[in-house]
Image (cartoon, rainbow, N blue to C red; front, side, top):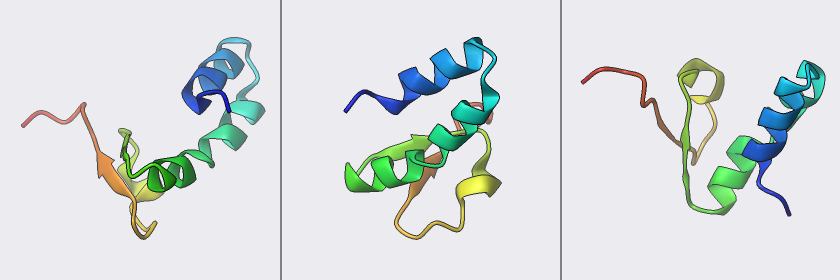
Amino acid sequence: MRPLDTDIVVAYLRGNTAIAERLKTNLPEVAIANNATLVTHNLKHYENIEGLRLEDWLVQS
């Protein structure tokens, strides 16, 4: 399996936002399966997913 973040960046840079959006929906599943934290600035989009740890690195502390 290739890293999804690479696929999203490539699709976005090629102007294919539909593919990028579809790949983004897999990110929470991958993060949960790997016991990882999903880093995003769009917390509201993912906050209701049970078992998903989120961080926003753009927020000033």
